[in-house]
Image (cartoon, rainbow, N blue to C red):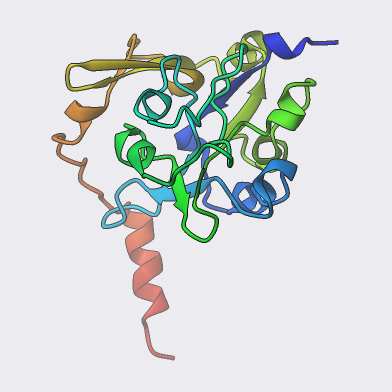
Length: 215
């Protein structure tokens, strides 16, 4: 049996089909009180329907915990950054503003920061997080590094992200193409890249034209 310490979380944005199964499954996690801690964002809604799941990346040095004045956010020994503890959280929103990935959300009704804790009640005993257990395209994958390398030979996992002068390393891995090997994802640089032009294949032109021809 695979030990829980050998399991890792992998996100492959290119495989996301926007089905929302992960969002619905997240509401069933016992630690979230019926609320989803995952969201789907559009990569570039003006040019593509492509979506990407956004979960907590569980940073090795979590900024959210570092800026918390009440010491309400804890990181477990195995690297999972937990939701703020209710008795200590003062709803100051420091963590919400500081997270480079935009993950923590303030529940104003409960005066509590809540976020993905990788279904710790499940992953701590070797089970998959709810989102990864239902993802039909395996855009969210929970398993060993050997499994992901066998299943995705053309991709490689990266867990270092550059935000200006700050490098953030994470417990969660992002899958990127292996054809252009990189050690980290420069998030800030990608904001200045010009999106690739979206061209339509000739066959698709014909199909669209036929759809609008009157009977």
